[in-house]
Image 1: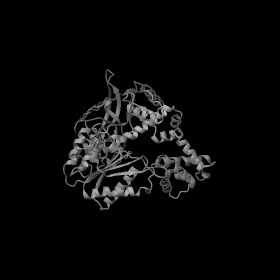
Image 2: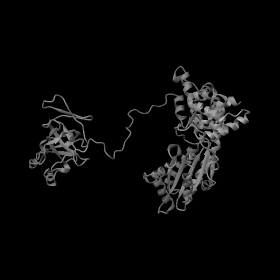
Image 3: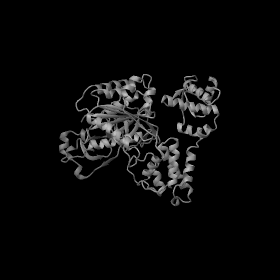
Image 4: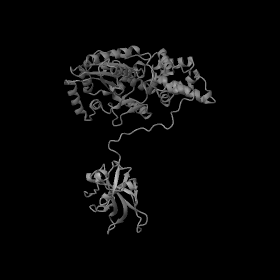
Length: 547
């Protein structure tokens, strides 16, 4: 047998446990405790298959600085010579180990090369003893666990439920689950025309093997992303039925990136599973979309929050819109933003020309559409009075037409109705009073109260921030840009414009109230300003003041 060479690759700190001068000593580390009589794993040259031995004794050397161990070695099946395997007269178990009686190995090892303990079940049946192997192998055992380390290619899994998921206890709980934003509806009502237009556009590009761009705009909560996902799902089903050629779908979101150039990295990683730097990824994508390749399938790329990919040179946007125009690209780009005229506002001519004229605008939902959305989600679950549904639909439609906010208000109304009842099971339908209380909670947060209690100049500054955001098509502006808007609004309202120092003081007070997010590194005209609340909340809080 080949001599065992133990190898200490990782420094492990062991200390003595128990009284120092008795035979039954123990070694302790921060992960394990080993005692004589246990089966142990010993570090060697192969990390996947460490040596197996039985610990007989623990002792220290003469200087008492190094810890030693006396062991009895065992052989794995892979270490048994082939001629010895034939003498067994049977097929051994792959995890079987064998008692080794040879003297080719040193029985004393460095105790710090011990990886840990392992469980071994010994089989002493007469049929397992082979006299011909007495000089080297006998007494087969079965090794239950052969490595204490985490497998390098392990795949994490979620354990199955031991108890089934809790079912809704009453109608209000079922309605609340159906009205959750994350709940997948059976259909997307009120967006049939937009669905058909996007479907026809992508289908034609996939069928023809060509590229193209489509710009989709609309205020938040109008179903842009959900409609596109439904289009892709239907196209993938058609592809599985061999009705259209196969294609790949990739989605990136500007909100999830710390830098616009990370778009190159994410696109390349989803296409080829490569993770490289942004510059290298841009070069590889340029080569991929410029050169022909056999059996190249069409790629459909969804770019959400397009305005957050804006840079000074606008090279990221330019490349995303220019690649589909290449002859061999076979790339279809669908872009989503909140501003309808974003290309005219922030894009230079060479970028806007690459985008093309294929555009679609998602209008805010009307109160009838919001009412239809809620009704379709409830799906014959009678939890709301008709007047209550109409009230919440009209309120949200008059403010923003955001379907997500409408669903949140309805869910909160079901909670209020359930808590107001003497017993949850005896709760009735959601009435107008419950909806009004939910609306008051939704639009009476501490931020809205702070805006209503702010001074006239502070409220005017918040209006200037929103006006500048809408002019730029972005969610960020400099103090200088907002201050120009503030002076213009002051003249329109017949107020005396404030000075620059007073404007900075107003901005700092709003930042201290956390109504604005201000760039902390500078306090000058180029300080960047962002809203810390939604524009809808600001307009709702300012509406009574302006009226």
